[in-house]
Amino acid sequence: MLRNSLKFAAVAAVLVASGITARAAQLSGDARSAIPRDVQQLVVIDYRAMQNSPTAMQLRDRVMPPDLRQFDEALRRSGLNENHDVDQLAFALFRPNAAQEEVTTVGIAQGQFPTDDILASFKKKAIKPKLIRTNKLYPMGKTGFVLCFVDQSTMVFGMPDAVKAALDARDGQTQSLLTNSAVMDAMRSVDSEDLWSVLDQKGTQNMMKQVLGEAGSVADYESVRKRLLVSYYSMDFQHGVKFDLTIHTGDAFAAATVSSLLNAAVVYRRMTGDETEKMAMSATEVTSSSGKLSIHFGASDNDFASLLKSQLFQSMVR
Image (tube, rainbow, N blue to C red; front, side, top):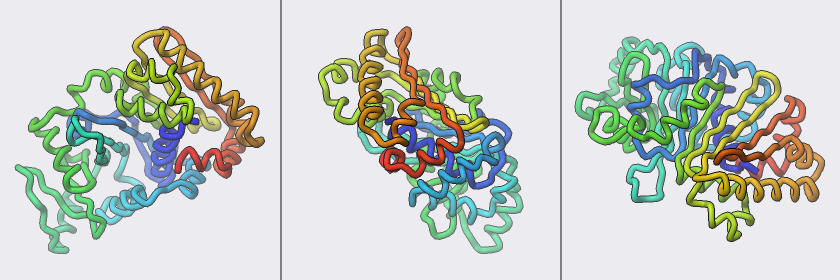
């Protein structure tokens, strides 16, 4: 269940466990303007609220994927003090071309950066920037990533093409997230949470296809798939682990149909799974109301620690 959402949540929680502190999980206007319009998924982390979570540490140990290790390593090599400088970190998965399926990722870090010291260090090491208009892109070690300080508190980083796309959006060369009303509206429901994410229509449809598995190919799902408009989820690690996902559909019928399919999948897992899977499914609630589908999962730290070791969890985040 919830394979794609849990995968992104796990990726974000890995970064939480790196020991970085935060002030808030809301993105600044500069950060939002540096995200291209056709974002498929946006993940944002509030480190101050989550840095002491043992559960996040376990997530780090178990599910940190190679690409995230590269981001993590690149940040450390950039000259930032990850324990003090970075307040928020966001990852935006976006389509460089709206007509294509391929997505790329750009990272955005917010905080109080000692940019003068960092740039002086680059100069001392004879690291020269590449210019995109007035923006200076610096290489981040041997990772292939580059970074750009768009102001004193916002840094964009990632592969060169992804960072260029972000800078094009921020400089008004292309449309930014600020013009995507569906995603911007969804953000307002979750952007004060510890960890939150928003998926656009395509991202929501892909997520639900994976969540439903074989059930996603049945006629009932195909009849409502295009009515899945946008979704958002949040995770709270303050008292155990809480996960809440909301999907907006075109109407109450679509929400009820997908809710029925999900509940059937939950019941099946309760009947056929091992004890850990049964526990996870018992802690999962699926409801629908007024064109919204809601999924809630809650567990104690100990129960979630058991879930981390299970085949079920590994299949979710693989």
